[in-house]
Image (cartoon, rainbow, N blue to C red; front, side, top):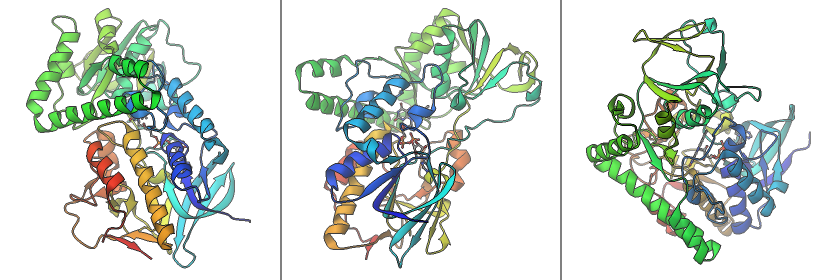
Length: 481
Ligand SMILES: Cc1cc2nc3c(=O)[nH]c(=O)nc-3n(C[C@H](O)[C@H](O)[C@H](O)COP(=O)(O)OP(=O)(O)OC[C@H]3O[C@@H](n4cnc5c(N)ncnc54)[C@H](O)[C@@H]3O)c2cc1C
């Protein structure tokens, strides 16, 4: 078997992988690279999810790349527009030429003698190997094969259709049907108004409420900037404006939880019909930003509730019946279709098995250096975005830092870079600092972060920007050889 070798292999052709290649092309033109993508198309999340209403829940001025500002009129964009933007970016940068599709990486093994990673890949179902000096994992954070779907008592008795948003069936017809959407996260609040346009009735069934914040789907200030400034400047100003506004909201929520809870509740109450049970359905038990805020563009969820076509029920499923759900309160919810918007199954490093010199790497025991490299694992970086802001803001900084690291190694003739956790990193915490149940379920298998730099993953774009762009690459915790 011939083994193709590269300087850098990027795994995944989603938003992060495409951005990574753009940065590699600009900042590391001397490096040979390719992208291995498990699926038949690029786009990752924005190609996989096809449920009605799929859209961003962060603004596109921060979700788009700094090097290719968003040109669309809407700042909260639908999934198809985001997928198109990623395709256009890949084409414009010649990135698509470097993507090998249908290449699922199953395992990656580092050999310190060869100073190479050898990858075991399923290529169109056939075994294949690749080698590279540096591996950059842009695999996202969840399992594409299966979303999270809890079992419900007597679920086999349901005579209608069960649907998971991660595998939305093309042939599903919900016109004039009664639909129950189980869940309370971003997907559930997106689906409800979209389905309510044609369904007879849509019920959002949640065990407990989430924070929901209505934002304008268009950003008048950003659109005005674009009318009077060159695209690049306007894009940059709009990105910083929104990144800093998001950061300010996050800091307010974390530092003054009681005040921010009251403000968020006030906004929801103002958007709902008079007398609506705001505290039952929209006043969560947890503090703001313990879990991601759900954004609804132009208050579409509240409009659907006001129209009577949609409703929220806060209760738990006691059992499934042929024509719907029996709830713990005894209420019966009639349903023709039940959508389980119950979340993702988190997965680190694209589900691949990693080993270093024959030793298996237990990802759950690894601590991440700058939320980018793994303690004890040479020449490997992974890309993870913010949980409190647009993914791209951090993903792009990560890719720039990887380029700086690659250039630093080449300049100094280093072949290997390995973070070493010798000193104190402080208390170990989950890398994804959210208390959402989909994160809590996966904690054991995910890398950790420490309590202090450089083992800390900050949720702060401003500090990260300064640190990643101006900070030194060398650090006592980084061992170069
Ligand atoms: C429904 C939904 C809505 C979201 N909305 C937002 C939002 O509005 N704002 C925001 O900031 N974030 C949002 N996110 C988070 C979102 O995942 C990120 O915005 C972003 O798309 C992540 O990009 P990525 O390239 O890192 O990962 P993905 O988009 O997940 O892409 C990863 C790619 O890697 C490939 N891959 C994985 N494992 C392997 C392997 N072993 N071998 C080869 N290829 C592999 C996959 O096939 C995929 O193409 C949303 C997520 C979901 C699920």
